[in-house]
Image (cartoon, rainbow, N blue to C red; front, top):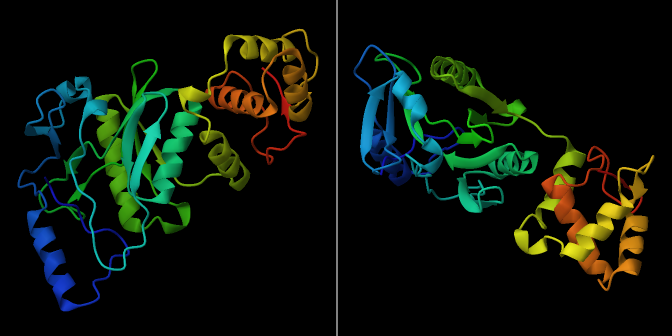
Length: 276
C-alpha cells in the first residue's frame, strides 16, 4: 500500500522518527512526466493503475475504491481517526481527523451524497512541481450520478501550499466534469445539532408505521404553523402506544432523514419548531 505524504504539523521528536519519516517519503509515488497523472486502485479489479487525466477516468466508480494511502502513525499523534458509518450507503468511510468526520456527517445529513470513498487516488503533479502530489480527501457519488470531490481543512489552517493543491485539484475536476469543494468551516450550533441527530441516523431508529402516521398527521400539510417539539412528542405519545423515548427517537431519525425539518442554526430544544 502506498505510504502517505507528510502531514502538516508532523514534527519528529527524535532521530529515530526522522529516519522513519525519511523512509516513508522514499515510498511516496513520483511523477517523471511533464503532465499530471492519477495513481489509483482500479475499483473493479483492485489493481494499481496510473493514467493521464483523460475522460475515461470520469466513468470509473471511485466511490467503491479502497484508500490509496495509509494514515501515518507516530508518537504523540493527536489527530483522531476512525471510520464513519455513512447512513445513506450503510457503509463505513475512513476519516483522518475529527474535522473530516464532521465533513462526512454534513454530507450524510444533506442526503444528496449516496456513497463516499476516502482518498481514492493520488494526483501526481508534473515533474518539477512543488508540491509533488495530492490525495483528495473524499470522492462523492451524488444522487443524480454526478461526482463531487471534497478537500477538508479548517479555514484557519489553510496554507499557501494547501491553496496550490486545491487549485490544481479543482482544475483536474473541471477537466473531468466533476464538481469540487473545500469544506473549511461549520456553524457551532449546526455542528452540535447534527452530532445529536447523528445518534439516530441508523435505520433501527426508523419509526414504526403507526408512529410515522401519527407524526405525519401532527405536522400535516394543513398546518399553518410548525409545532413545538415537546408538543409533537406529547401528541404522538397520546394517540399511539409508544413511549416518549420511542417517539423522540423516531422524530430525531426523521429530522436526520429530511422527512421533518427544524432550524438547526439554533440549539435543538423542546421549543424547536418542527415542520415538514
